[in-house]
Image (cartoon, rainbow, N blue to C red):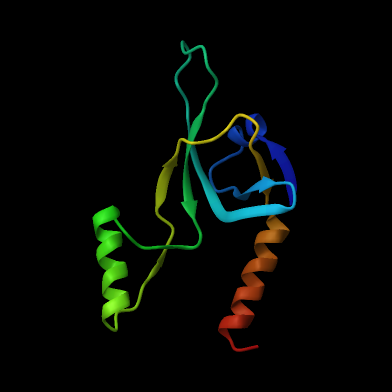
Length: 119
């Protein structure tokens, strides 16, 4: 992993795996989606992007998510993994990001597969 500032992060391609970084703390692991650009005539740099949370469920909207969680809590309903994209518009200028390398992603996938195989 490498630590990048917000300006560099906003230039990274969709599909970048990352976590918000504060000294000594890594946030949730997410996947960066498209950067939302204001257009060529806008005086400010891109400030927003789509993100997918890797610890999320397959849901369509907040009502659907609430229903799924209620059913899982009160009935024998299995929650399904998903990585829906939501808009990330609450980023502070000084935010740092821990950006995963291809090797980091591969090692994580291999580790999860070992766990799934009972090893």
